[in-house]
Length: 297
Image (spheres, rainbow, N blue to C red):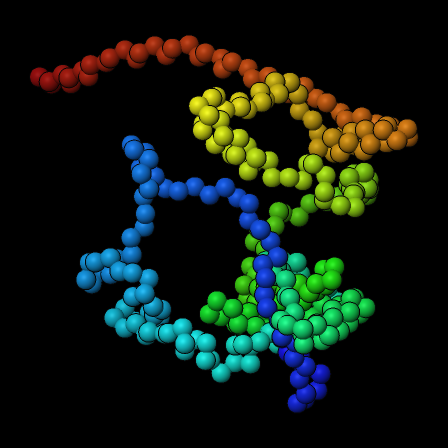
């Protein structure tokens, strides 16, 4: 990792990159349903119609329909880029000025050897005291990327960032213009106050889907019935107004604190569907025969 405090000076911090997250998702194999044998993907050369090994597979860029330009891993590693073998810090800025949509997966940066301990700690403390993050450029998986360095505890975290042209314009997805009253906005803010918390360690912030899949697998392994899904609540046939429901949520929170509950949600009966009135069957029109014109004498 390098920085550029001056036009020609560089500060180097040897580091190695460690994944900051773990994937606990349950993975499935593709199997043939008749005998549960594995179904695998074969890598086949289209011209020779034969399966090839990983050692025989390289990279190629499709220049035209008939022309492919081969690119080797060595050529990518030897690209004339300062970021090819280093993370180069290019700027510092407040973290709140960066759109979270541009921030992707995170990695821990660990000092590489004892000699890196002091410059690593210096950079970490400088980031922490300045309340800023560093924006850097680096090469990863065959492409140059933009990154964000921030402090997490005693470690420095590198977040991959998306380039500006990788963020889609959401204007075409927005709803049509609507008017909101101050009462509606105040109600939404009051609800946010009642739901505000300081951490995400509560039991409701857990991966219930993975737990349910694990229980399903265990039940099938033990040849017993898997747990059944809870019965959905019976339809009350009532329609709750969204704004009224918002007020009701705020009232419940105030009631738990012993405050004035205020108004409750307005509940309206849903209109019942009326059976379509049967129309009397139309009588078949009498079949008329055309009169032949009389022949004049």
